[in-house]
Each structure stands twice: as structure tokens, then as C-alpha cells.
Image 1 (cartoon, one colour):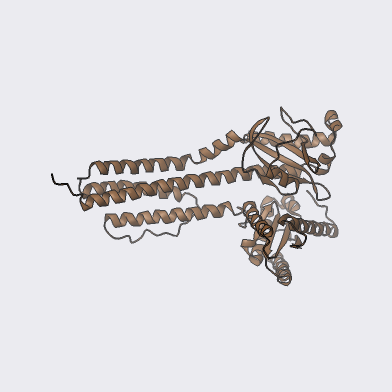
Image 2 (cartoon, helix red, strand yellow):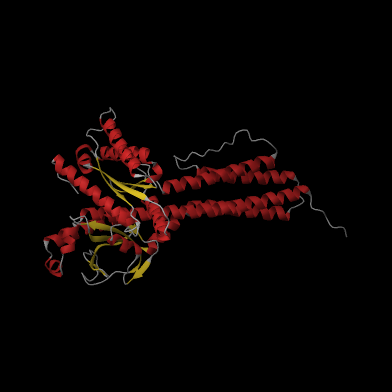
Length: 454
């Protein structure tokens, strides 16, 4: 019996179908992973923002000085700071966040950290009980806020946590504010955020697999069957592209004009367009994840990545140099209180825009509130001094322009250079620059006769 030869049409159908199913699978996986990553970053940012805001409102000197007697007698320093943390917990829960705990930690010895104020139904033992130690918690005790990348489990349950340092009047870390959310809620939020993309991916993959099965079973059908199937697949691709284009500020540089050729060539071009838009969407999402939404410079995530890279160079003994500059907008709270938060935001945006134009957006990061950090590698001191002078000139020009806000913008800044003989990590250099900035800020308020407001 003669073996039946598979026609060219059937081969084309099988090849194209297999390719499209593979594309659907890859796109579905990429979009689901991207959605999970973006949601995780948003949740971490919200936790960290809550911890940092609470840390700015509580009084570090008072918390550091609390004793067991303060708690037992509910003294004014204890009650005031307790009420602040309790209000944050109530507000977060009313706004739909499953905040488990918010509390303070204090370091009582170089090796020991204990719970302090803890407004919960089942509080930790005051100034006695130790928490589960994590990298983010320890880093916060040295002045760097952060979020745990992994959940941990203690006697209260499985949790994700963020920590922010509370500075005392001596600009040293006096305490740490911790924010916990239930790991189950956190994981569900990430899962739910991917439902829309997962559903589209699942439908598309299922449609692709179904088409492949139908085509395999009915190999004898002619090219009109292929045309029908391609039209269905084209519709799926269009739906996927519509989902990709939903962000209003995402404008892919891809054109679908003047597509020519037969049905297979047209479909191939549309698949290429879909692939290119997905690639651009991934790049767009990564930029959003590493960019501060207000100032459009690097955010804390980008800053921590840069710090990690520098620490790796230091640890490897690489011969290089870097300088850290810390800028802070003077009187931002007065601007917010007097002219409104919109004016305060404008002041921050103007300051960040001038700084990044002079020092380079790739070197500029907003690490919290009105604090902007610049990391310059392998630049000599005279160049940096010239850049700083140019920034002062540009700021003066803006303050005199018609675009200026109701009150002049001024900046305090600090600078520190890496000393490979004494500096063991990036934080050593940052602390000197940060202290230098605070000295400059204190001098500004003393000279201007204004009282600094926390």
C-alpha cells in the first residue's frame, strides 16, 4: 500500500500553528511573570512608604529613652508615640490593606534588638522579646530602610515586613519602625493582579492548542481552512495587543502600515509586531519599576541596585573611585503648608530636573521624601565642584524666572568621597555625605532664622 504524502499546505499549516502556539505560551509566561514582579514592587513600595511615614512622625529620642515604667504608667512619651502607630494601623486597615502589625524596635546592645512600642491585641514583650532577625531589619538599624524579599514565620504567623529607621536629634538611628503584612494576603494580591493577563494567556494558549489539534486531525482540508484558522488567530493577537497598549503612557514604536504579501506573510508580520510590542512593553515596565513617578529620576529600587553594584566592586578590590552627593530641598514642609502640596511637588520636580541635567539622570536617585542622592564614579573633584556651582547658577536663574513658584527654591547638600583605606562599604561614604548635608541644612535654618520642621 502506497504511503500518502503530506501536502505542502498541510506542512505549512502544521509549522505555522506550532509556531503560534509557542508564541502564545511564551507571551503568556512573560506577561504573568512581569505582572507578578510589578505587583510585588508596588506592594513593597507601599509597605516601605508606610514605615517611612510613621518613622518621620514618631519621636526617636523619646522612644529610645522609654523604660518598662513608661509602659506600665502610660507616660506621655509612651502614649503619644503609641497613639501615632495605632492610628497608622487603623488607617491602613480602613483603606483595605491587610496590615498585621506596626511597631517599634530598639537596639539595646550591639548584638540584641528588642520590641518597643507595639499597638496590637497580642503585643511582644516590651523591651525584652527579640524579633526574627532579617537583613532588612538589621540594615534599618544602621540607617537604610528596606523590605524583606522573603516571608518569615514567628510566633504570630507568616509575614512579610518593611523597616524604616527613626533618627534622633543627633541624626543617629534611635529606633526602627516595622510594618508587617500577612504572607497569605501578600501572595493573594500578587496572584490576583495577574488574573487578567493569565486569563487572556490561557484563552489564547487554549485556542492555539485547539487549532493545532483540529488541523492535525484534518490534514486533508485545503487552504480555505487555513485562512479561517489564521483569521481566528489574528483576532487573538489583536486582543493581546489591545491589552499591551492599555497603559496610557506606553507608546510602542511599531508600525503595522503597508503590510503586504499572502495570508501567511501578513500573519508572520503581525506576529513580529506583537513580539516587538511585548519586548517594548517589558522595557517600559522595567523603566517604570526603576523610575520615581513624581520626579522621573531613579527611585529607591534603582538606588539599591546601584549601591549593590558598588559594594560588589569594593568587596572584589576593584581599583575605582566614587563620590556621593546628598541634596535636600530646604523648607519643603513650609512650602507644602503655605502654598499647598502641589507647589511642594513642583519644587521637588524642579530640583530633580536641574540635578539630573547636570549630573546625569543615570546617576541621580530620589531615595525618600525630598532627599536626592547622586553617585558619581571616576569623576575628579574639580569636575564635581564645577557641576555643583553650575547647579547653584541654574537654580538662581529658575528662581528669577517667570516659571518660578511662589517662594524661592533652595537646596542643602553634602558630599563625601570614597576612601579605600577606611571605607568598607558604600554606607560608610553615604553617612558622611548625609551628615554633611544635615550640617549644611542646619546652617541654612540658623542663618535664615527659620526653625526646621520635621
